[in-house]
Length: 423
View 1: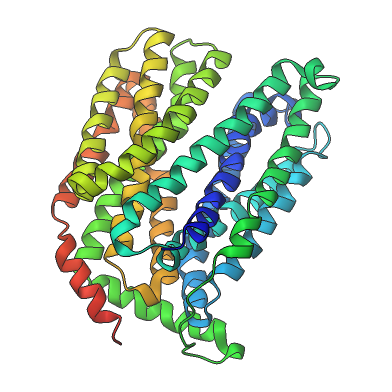
View 2: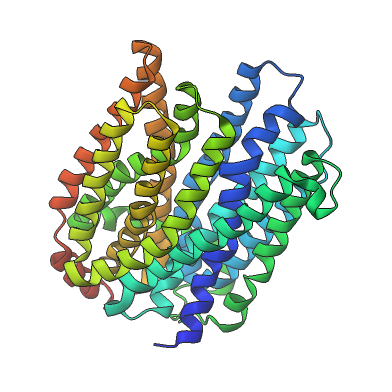
C-alpha cells in the first residue's frame, strides 16, 4: 500500500468538491436567478435551471457505461479522468466572464462544467481498485470523501466571505466576488489534481482490442456488461438498493434549501447550514470508514439509513432554524460515510479488470437517483399542498433501499467477482 499514491488519489476529491459546493450547491442557482436570468419570471428561470441539470445528468447517464467500457478496453481510466477534469475546469473558469442577462450561455457552460465534473468522478471511482488493497477499501474510500468535504467546505467558506465582505478582498461588489469565486474553483480544481496526474499509476491490463478499435470494443463490452450485471444477482440486488437509498440521500441534499425556504427560513441562514454539513462531514466520513472496518460495511450502511429516517421524521415537524442547523449536522455525520461505504462495498463485488465499466453503471445509477426523489417530492407537494408531506414521502426510498441492501450477500458477490476475473 503506497501512501503517496493513496493520498494523491484522495486529493482529487478535495479538488473537485470545490465545484460541487461553491458552484452546484452554492452560488450558481442563486446567481442564475438574480443576475443572469433576472429579466425572466421566477418560474421560467427555475424551469431552465432544472432543465440544464437534467440535460447534464442525462448525458452522464448515457455516456457513463460506454466510457467505462472504453476505458477498460484500453486501460484509459486515468487519461479519461484528466480529460473530463480539464473540461470541467475550463468551463468553470468561463462562468466568471459571462455577462448579466446572458442566461443561455451561462446554462450552456454550466452543462459543460457539470459534464466534466461528473465524468471525471466515474474514472476516479474506478481508480480506487488500482490504489487500494481490498482490506483497506472502506478506509481509503472514506478518506476521499472526507477530504472532499474538507476541501470543498474550506474554499466555499472563503467564497462566502468574499461574497458577504467583498471589501476585505478588494472587490467592488458581491457580484464581482461571485465571478472571482468561479475562477478560484477552477484554479483549486487544477492545482489539487496534479498529485493524481503525477503519482497515481493505473494497473493496465492487456487490451482486448487494438488501439484503433477502442470505441468498437467499448460498445461490445458494454453489451456484454449488461448481460453480466443481469446475471450477477448480488451486483444487481445491491444496485437496486443503492439506487433507492442514494436517491433519498441526493434528494435531501438537493431539496433541503428549497424545503427550508418553503418553511419561511432565511436563505443566508440556510447557507450557514450547508457549511455546517460540509465541516461535520469531514471527520464523520473518516470515522465512518473505521466503522465499516469494525462493524462491517453493511452494518455501517444500515446505521446511516436509520439515521436518515430519523432526520426525515424530525424535518417533517421542525419549526425553527436551530432545528435545521441540528439536522444539517446530523446529515453531515452520515452523508459522506454512506457514499464512501457504498463505493467500497460495490468495489468488492465487481471484477477488478472491469472496474471502470462497472463503475460506469454505478455512476449511471447515481445520476438516475438525482431525478426520481425530487420529482416525487415535488409531485406530492403539488397534490397535497404540503411540503411537510412531501419530505415525509422520501422515507419510502430509504425503507425500500434498506430491504434490497439486506438481500445483498457480499461474500457471494466477492466470490463471483474473483471467478469472473479469470476470464
